[in-house]
Length: 353
Image 1 (tube, helix red, strand yellow):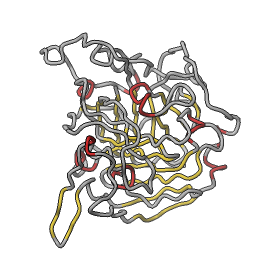
Image 2: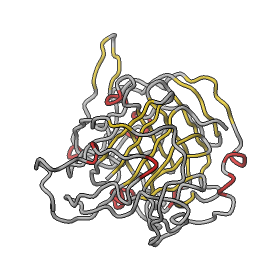
Image 3: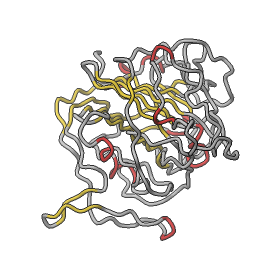
C-alpha cells in the first residue's frame, strides 16, 4: 500500500505539577513549537525544559529496543490507514483528563518503538487526505488502550499554558472514538482548520466526518469549514464557545457540514492490522530502554515552521464523532510544536508537551 501524501511524526512530551524552573520570557528560552529536529536524528527527549508541568515523562528516540506494551515512546506516526498511532494513557482505567499531559503512543504497526493497539480494539476507521490536512477518525474499544470505560475524554488541547507553544493539529480521544487531524503548515488556513478554541464541542464540530463504525476506508476529500465558522441567512458567522463556568453546552446554533469525499477504498480490518493479531490486552508500567535511531520511514526531512496562536480555556468534551458537545471531564492544557516539510508531498512533524 503506497503511503498517503501526508506523513506525521508526533511526539508527546510530558508533564508533572512542578514549579516553573525556567523563565519562559527570557531571551534564551525556545518554545517547543519553535524547535527543529531531523527525523533521522531525533533527540532522546524533544522537550528539554522544566516548566510549569515539569520535564518530559517519556522519550522520542524510539526503535525496536523500546517497542512493547510497556513502552514510554512518545512519538506517534500517521502514514496511512494501516499505519497510524494514537495517544493514550500509560496505565489502565485512566481518564484522559487525568493523563492528558503524559500520554504515550499506541500504534497499528510494529517498527515505531511504541505500544501496539490490541487486536479488535479498532472497530471502524476513516483516513482522509485533503488539500489542507490529513485526518484519521474512528471508533475504538478505549479500555484496550487504558482509557477508562465511559470516559467522555476530550481534546489533547495545547493552549500553551506553560509556554511550550501551539500545534497545527487536533486530537480528541474518548467516548470510544477518536479524531487526529494534522494540518499542513504551508496549506490553506492551517491555523483555522486546526483551531484550538472549540475544545468543548467535540469531534463532530472540529473534525466533521462520514466515518462509520464497522467500516475501514481511506478517501480523498475537500477541506472542512474551519471549526466555529458557519453561514446563517447568507451571513458568515463565527461561533463563540461559552465559558466553562456557564455549564454544559446543551445546544448549538448550527450543525457542522461534513465535507465531500471521493475515491474511497474500503478494506477489511484483518488485512490492515496484521501486526495486532497477537496483541490481546492493555498494559501499564514503564520501559527503561531508550535505544538509538528511529525506525519509521518519513516522507522527507523536517524544516521549521512557526507556532500557531490559539486562545481559550481548557475543558473536557465528548470526543464522540456523533456528539454535539458538552463538557464532561476536565483536562489540563498542554503545549505543542509543529515542523513541516514539502518534498513532493506534504509532511508535518509535531511535538506535544
